[in-house]
Amino acid sequence: MTVINTKSMKNIEGLLSDPLQVNSFLKLYDLMIEKVVPKVRKIAFNTMLEHEKYNREGDVIFMKGSEWNETERQTAIKLTKAGFYVIFPSKEQIKAIKELENSTDARKNDVYIYDKKTYFQQKVDLKTVSSGSKETIAKHITSG
Image (cartoon, rainbow, N blue to C red; front, side, top):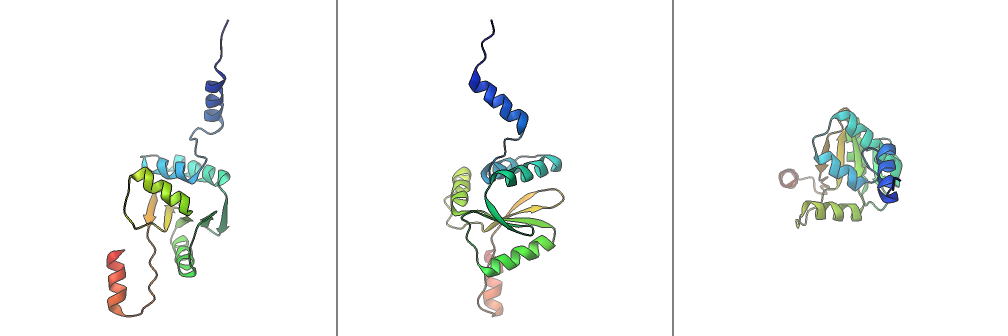
């Protein structure tokens, strides 16, 4: 007589239906830190989108609960034209990422960008410069 552990059966079924187990932006973030081939990155990216709640404007993805301003949105649109998907994570996702990284830094990354060909993940801190002086702009660029 064979005894089957139902808990392990559910894990096996999960692996068969979603081999990457990427059902959230946080799991995508965690996977993308590892060295993974572009095809797997693309599958993981698309799988994450199937499971998360978000609004989308072209290739800019605003996760439910994300915060942004008009300048950041316009910059994100320009990044998509340069060959990237742009994700604005929610406050909770940013907090969870900081915990994963054991980061106590007060700075936060505004967006995460993904190359449209390789799906390579990068953290980006978008800057809003309200002054037009060369010194202020140079200071913001340097701090960014």
